[in-house]
Image (cartoon, rainbow, N blue to C red):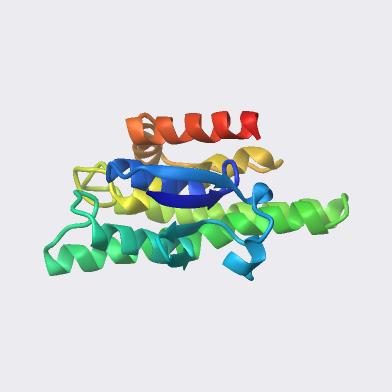
Length: 203
């Protein structure tokens, strides 16, 4: 069984949902309940996935590891489609994720006032531009991976939930909204939300 170190509503939610899409059992461990977490990941970030004696860090690397290890419909086998799927995962993880991360940095490190408001607005504008890119990518298909959900769609769905924590106007196009709604309704995603909620309540 995999052991997933997580924080509620963090990007580790995507890893958990993908594990469930792969029909893999997972033990959730809240990062705050892990006394030696810094030895697992000196950076201090989640997710961290433990697979036997192997400790995996970095969300995109963990997801690619899982998709390579288990038979699945999330990662195509055709070389060209696989290359595009990896590009989509990295777009989500290395481009969209840091854009939302700026909101958290601003919220935690800037004093309230006009400068903070301007910083929030600039960060929101950058995020909105990225959602415009997603909208264009969905021009021909319901999901980034084509006609079925992909790992990148799951990642983007997790990130899209973060805008509500801040006083910003995040604008997501209609095609992207439909994609996000479809992912949110997946059994794997709903079970992951419920598992995080239940695990947090018992902590």
